[in-house]
Structures are given as structure tokens and as C-alpha cells.
Image 1: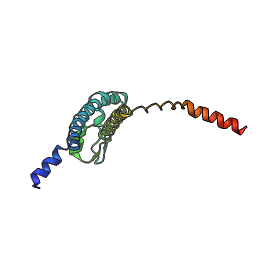
Image 2: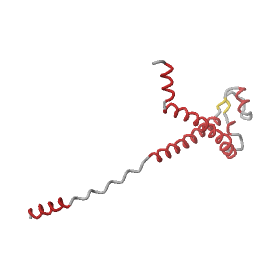
Image 3: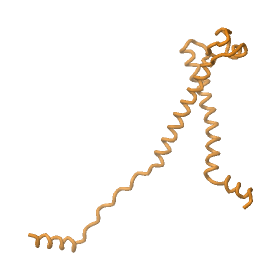
Image 4: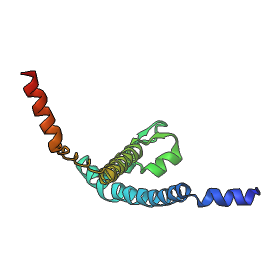
Length: 139
């Protein structure tokens, strides 16, 4: 079998196409959540914590002072940019929670309700009669 034919069979399999669609949708969804965190949530958190842009929170490691914006402080030397890290962690937590909810809903939709147990079969009348005879003979 030629390599192109094998590759075509591999690429057209349903699981590979599903994976590709999932990666594309996941990337786009990641951008939406990133924007939500960066543009909506973190400004509110920054306002609550002192009115600064939260992504500019850092600890200077090279005596450059905390009055500089993060980009300028990084040019002046090493900094510990914990604000950016917290933003990314929050972004991940929101994305993970949303994906968990989606998987939960999909699993709930996939579950089929168990089929009701069939009603017990009606015992034929001749069997009932034979049981009565047996019981009366035991007496």
C-alpha cells in the first residue's frame, strides 16, 4: 500500500477529523476566555486591589523600583511578574471549569435511561393448576 493511500485513510478517519475540529474550536474558545479574563475580570480585580492594571504587578529583582510599568521594568532588569502569572492561572481555571461543565453536559446527554424491567411473565393456567394439585397432595 502506498504511503499516500495510508495517509489518506488515516486523515479521513472520523477520530482524526473530530480531533482537528476540537483543537480549532478549543483554540478559538481559549481566545474568548483569555479576553474575558484580561479585559473584563482582571480590571475589576485590579480596581479592587488598588486601581492598577493587575498585569503590571511585579517585584523588582534588579533595584529598578516599582513605579515603572512592567515593560520598562523588564527592560531595566529582571522582575518577578506575578500579576501576569495570576492572570494566566485565572484564565486556566475559568477555561478548565467551562470545559468541565461542557463535558458534564455531554456525558449527561449521552446517558440513556435504563430500560424499564419487563413485567413478569404471566404464569399459564395449567401451571397454576398443577401447583395447586402439588400443594394439596403435600397436605
